[in-house]
Length: 137
Image 1 (cartoon, rainbow, N blue to C red):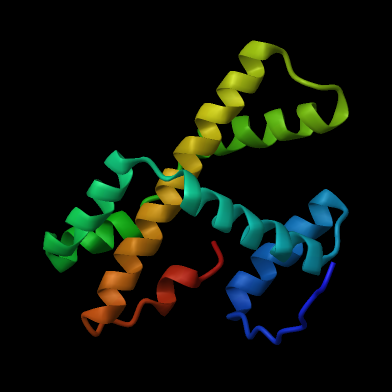
Image 2: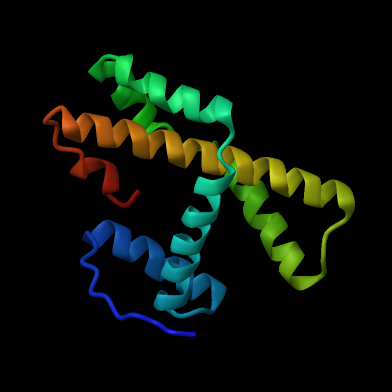
């Protein structure tokens, strides 16, 4: 496999986020980032027409609505459930019901992140400073 080297400058908060993820999963930072890039490429191919229509409709929203979407996150409970299912899948495997729930939560997470990214992009295009959206929580 041919590989290409790139230099990527990440904001501090984003770097720390992926560094922590790499520590938790016992993987290198490079592997963590490659996983995110590969997932994004895959997700792009799998976005439903309904979600694409929703994202396109964001262009008609006012700035206040875009800021609300850009700041929206998956609920803490759903995030914790997804994390637990990931660990269980890795350690012992999942039942069919658990795997279906994991798929639902991943879909919710991806929908949230895609919506946030689109809203932030539109806000940036409209001249807003969106750097606060990258701040580590």
